[in-house]
Length: 375
Image (cartoon, rainbow, N blue to C red; front, side):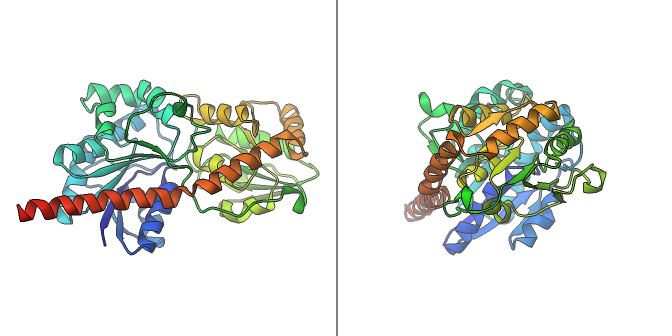
C-alpha cells in the first residue's frame, strides 16, 4: 500500500473534494494524512484523518474576514513550501496531492523531486485565465513561483469538473490535465416531481463581503412562497440575525447530500462544489455570485449556458428574485438540462478515476525507487 499527503488550506469548496478523494484512497487501504491550517484541525481529525498544521506560516481562517492582500499573502507564502518539505522530512510519502492554488507547495515538491498531483477544485479555464491573471497569480509570478511551469511539473492536474462545462476543454490543454469530473459522493437519480416543492439556499462557508444582506434578500424574496425553503448559513452568518418567515427553516449546517434529495431548486453563490453537487442531484440553480474576481461568475455562466441555471446579482431586488425562483420551481427545459448534466456527472464517477490516477503515480514512484536501489 502507498502513502499520500494532501496539502490544503482553509477555504470553502476546496476542502470537500480533497476529503472525498482521501476517503476513497483510505477505503482502498492506503495511508492518507492532511497538511493544512491549524483552523482545519478539528474537521480533519473528526473525519478520522491524521492532520498536521503548517509550521512557520501565519494562521489563516476562511470563516473570518480576509482582505485581498491577506489572501494573496497566504497563497503566495513561500513558507508553505518549506512547511511541506519539513513534513515530508519527518515522514516521507509516495505522492503529495496539493491544492492547485498553493503554488508554493507544488513548487517546493517539484524542486525537491517529490511526485505530486495538482487538485483543481474549480474550472481549469478559471485557474489559467482568471486566477492566473488576478492578484494572486500576479504576485506569484513576481515572487518567481512560475505557476504555469509549476503546474506542468505535476504528474496530473485533476480537474473536478465535467469537460462539457469547463470552457478550457474546448481548446488545447496541457498534456497532464485530466477532466475527471466533480469529486463528490454520487447520489442516485432524483425525480423532482416525487416530493413537494422545496428550495435549498446556501451561499458559502467562506466569508465574502455583503453576504449577509444578500442572504436576507433571498429570504425576503421567498417569504410565504408556496414551498419549503431550507437555509444553511454556515459558520459565517448567525441564523438569529436573519429576518425569516414561517416557510423558512434556517440552520447553521445540515449536510447538502441529506437535503438535496428533498428539494427542487438550489439558490447558491456559484461556488464550484455546491453547484456540482446540485447538478449531481439533477437540481437546477439560481446562481448569485458573491465575488466578481472569483470563479463564481464563470460557473454561473457555464451552467446557465447549459440551460440549467439563471444568474442574478447579489443586489437583485427581492421582487425580481421571487419571479426567478417561482419560474425555476416549475417544470421546464431547465429541469431537463439539469437532469442531463446530473446523469453525465454520475457516469463520470470522478472519485474512482482520481484515485486510480493517484495510485498509478504512487506505483510508478515505487518502481522508480526500486530501480534506483537495484542500480
